[in-house]
Image: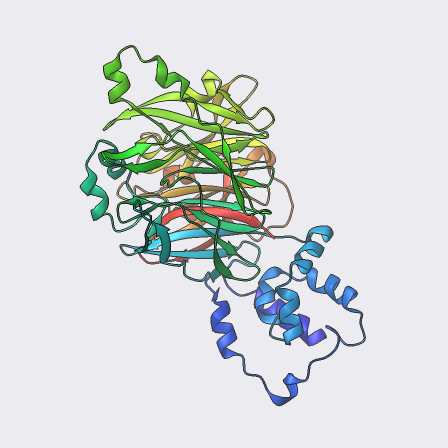
Length: 476
């Protein structure tokens, strides 16, 4: 037994450049005649209940190796009971799941264990779906999924250029995570908006199609409330082009069912002074954040290439209704490319990234609910000028810290942890502090030299010319 845990600890201390493929591990496994004999217990001379408690305390990255001990160990590792015990013991772990695009239309998921700094490849997403056509027949559509295609293409489609979609090599689905699983929702297939939803189960390591949305939509926004997945806005394909959606719906993962949510009123879009402006300016949801038990949806009006922020609206699940967002919150919500909003909640604080006007630095703001104002909490965020990139940076929150995901000068994807100087502690961390000297050559010096925050490198990995698309954090 001592050798078993020695093996697990050795594997979990690999360098950050290591990457595990569960499928490759299984291929290397060869069953000898002696290993075919199954022990009636997980660990000899111990009751299985106690063995389960021991296994639940192992780092999750070790499970890909210890499951090869026997068929019974594999069944235990892939059982929901083990993860219930982990939750009861408080040994769950937050992993970062990162979606990147390689080449023109290849999307890949990678999972990062921040503790061991080990990356793991996920199975390829399914690329063919059955979807009903408008005539009621079934067709096979090649489904190239992405969340971050250039916003300009969306706007051109919304203005009636129907041929734009046919030239898109991949199209925008929404990404969400609830109840320990990843979800990929909707998007385009050819020139049709899709209703289909795919779920990835990290325990079973498989993708599975679940109940479709009631409405086909692309570029929708997702958020989690009360262990349910909400989907709002987006666009749908109409006869004259893309049509912005005000509708919303909610998915219950425990019953595998969708329910309708009242549509967003877009109340400020209805007070435009002239019918001409009302027809020209299209309302669109530019973000969604679950904050203090409600959904916060910033909104914009646009007529390409002009965007006008018009605040936003808040959904309250208790009253099942929408209300206007406070003026300071909505009007001051920082916007990135083409009006979209990048935000995350960490320790009940709402943070948003403001790319500012500098090509080599940005700012992070925090919302002060008492004063209804956004305040700069990090004045300089290290980033390079990737104006041609669709999603050059992402925000994530895990281990109680704010994280910034971007690419350095070598095009390696770097996961950076922000430690505010006023909140620094002596708790152990696997992250590597980045002093201005160590960041030289990786990020602009102006962004490294700041007294407000200490940046720590959680992990980095070279994915070639891969583009950042989206990320989610799952606690299992």
